[in-house]
Length: 116
Length: 114
Picture 1: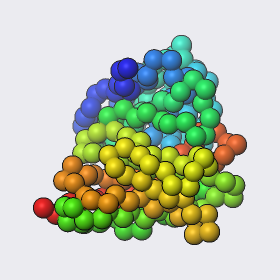
Picture 2: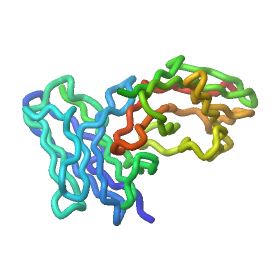
Picture 3: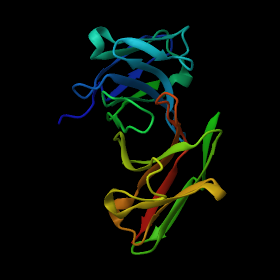
């Protein structure tokens, strides 16, 4: 089966500019996650979708970050305006239809964002 | 609240030597525990997971981990290191009965010395 797809793979922008990342999860996976991975740290969950509804966005900086998942499939994460501290790898993951805490999350290759 | 602590941000072992990466967890309820591997410029891949069926869990690429409740540990081991094992390894915990919100450790970079 095809894995989680993300684009772009790399993005360089100046601070105060906006940027958007796209994710296509594994077919049939109802749950989709966006993580932020800062250099030298583990991934941190930004937002979790179940189908097209938000389950958890408690760590999403809502003043500048937004995310949507239209039709319960693809998802877009946007940053506007970007700050230097947003430089990180943004990972998208999805998990199986049955969900559950023990189920594996499948990760995409990530988008490496550099804010200058 | 749940958390994991990975001891040692960098570990170097010789090719053929034992690999031991340490992970201790904190959870108010019985946890699910995971080890993920991340190769350069790639996403995370699941190595193995503990879901209470057996305390010794075998994963891919010859890795295994043992859940020790008394020590709140879930250390990752491999008897003989291979050059291809060089990567970043992350321990993660999830809460049973909760949603699928993984909490990751800060990672351990494994270097293999030829």
